[in-house]
Length: 243
Image 1 (cartoon, rainbow, N blue to C red):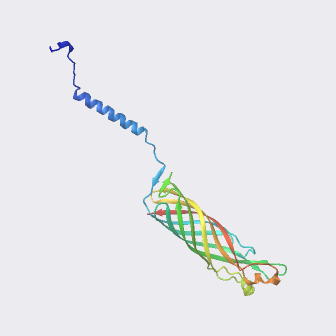
Image 2: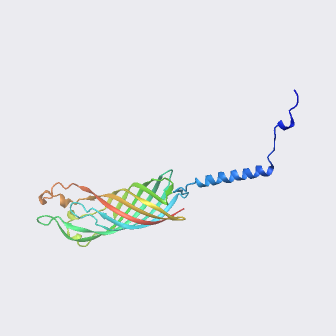
Image 3: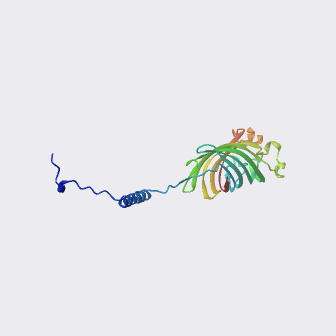
């Protein structure tokens, strides 16, 4: 076969090294720009610290029972230690101090009972709570909502009032020791660094033991029973430190 004429031979011009490098740089810049444009900042942030201590102040409003001799509303102070376990679960130990007052009720008064004075109440409680964080071990816009449930014991540390000493022994109300149950929820705000602000709202439950004088049939109070449950709504705000 005769050779092709020179004008019909294929023309091949190899790409220069400069053009190859320039093309690669343009493609790299374009791909990085596209990736940057698709990045969306996440509102979630993980926290690595596992321990937390805090102190809080708040208000509590307990029910005083059917005869009104239980502890009334008052201020509340708490100290708390918390430890993150795994995932969204953590455990907390809380000591609470509630100084308030209660009515002194005389069940021997003809025609029913009457209030003859008031007595100081110094409620000291200790409880253990399990806390479930809705966002796990991370925050959403620096917020961490949670629910908790717990149990403990509460005791009145106050001495018997001088007014109450005038009542018969069976007519005196004594708070004594009581089982304490808790349910509630709240929000932690991770302010900056290790510092947080925390708000809790909860329901506490304890027992009020009825004095024997309220259970005497001749006094006409009906079927009183030996004790009743009283509910106490509370709200508090705390400053905490995590480490």
